[in-house]
Image 1 (tube, rainbow, N blue to C red):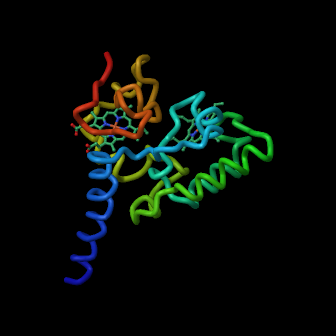
Image 2 (cartoon, protein in one colour):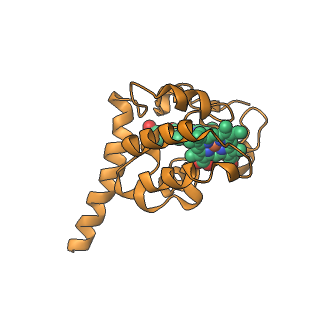
Image 3 (cartoon, rainbow, N blue to C red):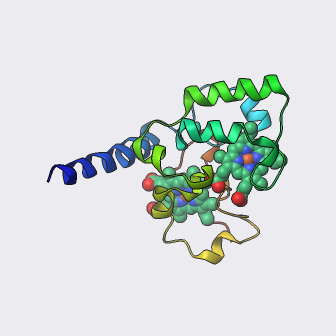
Length: 155
Ligand code: HEC
Ligand code: HEC
């Protein structure tokens, strides 16, 4: 019984905090570190740090030379600066902490759940280029706004 309530409470912690946060307050911090914007938004959008745990960001930042099959290395000082900022901004919600295999937002359970109605083939469209390209469908993703009334799936 106790475990059951805990489960509900922690589910709510994520959906009620992460997702309702997007309703009145976008997930992207108001002040984004300029280096994060210039260095981490050239191949994909600058992801809101709150969508991954601090340990996940730590792992990502210490393996930039082998970054999801590409080389995203930075000079030491820039890497350090971005790393420190991500540690300050990283998500602290329970589900964010525990389930992001391969340090991917797109591998988390909440991501699967929120996107389960999207057909496999949709992700492969040229206009989208994969799950990691949030801004292809979420028209205000750059400010961390993922509200469903601002979703538009391109053809
Ligand atoms: C040279 C291109 C490049 C740069 C620069 C780059 N990335 Fe990536 N990143 C990628 C690729 C490619 C993927 C995998 C995308 C996919 O699977 O569709 C990726 C994936 C990711 C993911 C996982 C997305 C998911 O699937 O949930 C995160 C998080 C991420 N990058 C963070 C960063 C951070 C932080 C920086 C800056 C330090 C950065 N990236 C810079 C190419 C880049
Ligand atoms: C193929 C288009 C597409 C891509 C790419 C995509 N999403 Fe979504 N996303 C959707 C759709 C459609 C929904 C569901 C809207 C609904 O429930 O009506 C959704 C829902 C969401 C929600 C829940 C919104 C809410 O109000 O409940 C979040 C958060 C979200 N997406 C984040 C992301 C993130 C982060 C990325 C990138 C890592 C991403 N999405 C990539 C189409 C996409």
